Image (cartoon, rainbow, N blue to C red; front, side):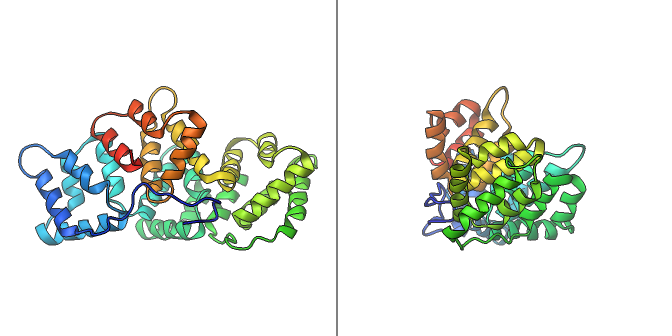
Length: 321
């Protein structure tokens, strides 16, 4: 479907047309009964069903066998493969709420995770994540963010949590004036008015902001991304650049995040799993195209080179090799 992203979203995991959750439950039960586990059968079922269909399988498993499918999977599987399967078995808003909670737990905060989840989603998705967070942790997401972040970065995340971006209106006549406001808040003054950047980036629709960025380039001769790069630093820069990149080309933003999760020594598996699981039903097809364009190799090739075993097989099945 076409969306505010400016492209038609291509998922790599689609709902199975004639899904029979009870038969799927039977396949999974057989895969885990007796000696050894049939990982291929588990991958075969769970990587080709939508998140909603997996929830139906969970219920049918409980109904048919009087057992908890998630508990059974946990006892049979291990390592990164287990983590990825459990992520698939969690409804997406709750899974992302848990990832946000994990990013704020303990000493230090994983700002990159907060940005990836909160600065890239539409109002409806954010509202679902917020509700899941509140229901699961009995606390408001905003309250935890306030306790764990500070300054302009905190304000940016709280603005995103308002879930009130205008997602429809796009009046080209407003673009030059908004571009001037951005210019005056940044390059056109001594110091930076981060609050104005925040207001404009969190309020207007993506199509509107793309026009504003075009106008900005006309005024300045440089992109607004360049301005953010030179005017800001630290977590705020990370957050605002993510918002800017998603407005310009959301698939390219996620392609870069996927690349970074596998770059250098070792793999940031938690991020890799989250990116694949959270995008495969939305726009992984677009992300794959951008990945190939940006890195001259396929996403599948990168995953194959960086992961192994059933974990690798599952991720490859989800990105649609």
